[in-house]
Length: 301
Image 1 (cartoon, one colour):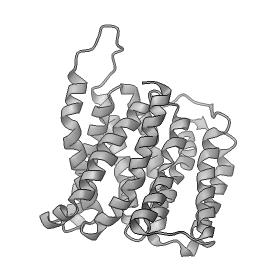
Image 2 (cartoon, rainbow, N blue to C red):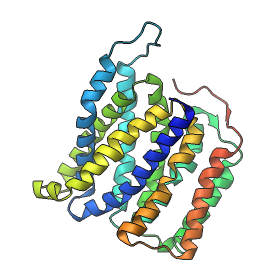
Image 3 (cartoon, rainbow, N blue to C red):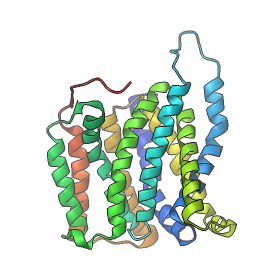
């Protein structure tokens, strides 16, 4: 895969993720958050399982690098699955009261949070643009709420909080890409998500076959396209595109979410909110195109 091919695939994934906000919101008419997450994760796991087995067992040439794909990939995928479940749960609960448009822009905050989290976990000091980007994104969030934080719904705050989990997931996906088994890694993490979400649904929500049937379109779109396909693309593309470049490209999901929300749900933002959304996107770009971060400690191996 060339770098250009990887970038185009990431843009394709961003479009799928942006549209997924609409399906994630409409699914809440019949399913609870954990029930929907469990259903999408089960679909993704079942779709990927045979492909993951083929990827893991296919013959490899003598010159192809060998990778440790035993306990190592299982451990990283399991932790990535926990981070994914945390992000998906906060996001899905948030979409019960937040709009798909707000959800897309607030989720993009994960890009701004990724460098500070990498500093905390890996000792990779953020570049000088990170602090201004954090301030810019906070101001953008304030304007997205109409010039006051109190105008943001409880769901908006939940989606803003989910960005921390997605930031952790980005770092774990980057680590998972080193195993050179993107389908297996994605399949394993969705198996973890399915287990956690099923437990959550059993404890907190009534899930019926009628509810699952009513939301089958949303489940299939998010399970097959927005989960199985796109997260495999993400893991594979991170082998060929710099993480900073990939983060900027996939953050365009916010723009696709706004477009889908406007066309399919009739959502509209006031002018001041569009200014805030633009500031959030500017912060996303700023944190990624600034000077390269300086490593002060070796990454987690």
